Length: 442
Image 1 (cartoon, helix red, strand yellow):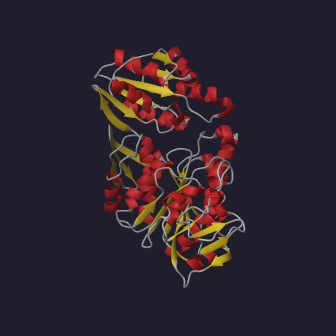
Image 2: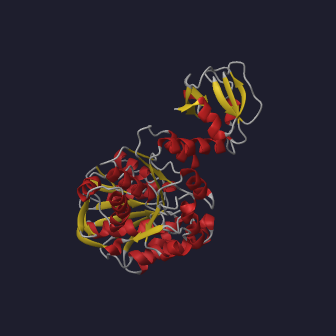
Image 3: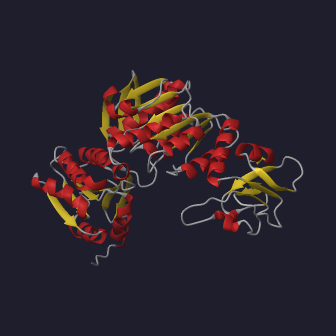
């Protein structure tokens, strides 16, 4: 909720109409279908939509506009030059009003997981608010910021990007106290052209970082090369950790003399947890509180989901994929499970070198574990399989999800554990649905 005068002050709006007595409070709405009498409508615009077309919808009693549109039923009309800019300014104003500790998180992979682990840890001690799921663009940032309660003590915002300048835009309105980069990898290299450009884009997170803030990042040369921040910088990685135990759904490790545990597997998840530990310590948490927070973390949907279907055990990690995440997750899986079967699909957005990136995954996996059966779906994933086949692995190639589903139903049994990894566009959930139905039709 924001007061009328705050809405005007934050956005620099020109008042076209005001028939509301006093400094009334409003809640912001971007959807006229769910608007209530106490809401002010902010019409967003995009390539294929214009929210201002719905200003005269029933129930819209107050609204922002970029035009001189004043409807008869409106009690309050505020004119701004750009509604997205107004949205960002309102989010920034509200963050300053609530004044939580602000944490920004980005990275080529693992940013949603890292955000969730940080939340799990910090919420042990603080009233904490976070980005929902992976709603990590500028609209998601505004929704996250304006959705926090007034007693929020810590705000965690995940930042994604599709090009240069996008993280900078969010960071400058977020003004974080802490900025976290999980890693810099080849995700989106097709859009940005090079790993260096990706690193530049990720390091934009420091654009709004407070000068007395802290920059936390993976100990990666490409990040160090491009970060532009003169304040405190902290780098850490799996090399700073002593791994004590690894098993399915469990990791135990020592970091800076203290022992911690996670209810998930994988060196990459241990690495993701290090920024949460560092943040907890800097915010005055005890090691016991941090331990409790790490132990209470559970992955979100399609991230290492374990499901048994028709006696077959599946692990679905098909939320998304890039070369770094595919290498890390498959390595973890084949090291921990007996009779492993790995179903790999295409990785998207890798640009003109996409074939080579897929082959590099194959070369990496060829040196991990020889007792693995691989099933590939799609023409790019086939390149992974070709490399593995040349190294003596058992590999089957499929064009569609339905084909690989039929193979699974007809050739695998409860002795196998099946791992699914691909970009979201491959829709690997269709494999699980086909196996559930148990009917093989090609």
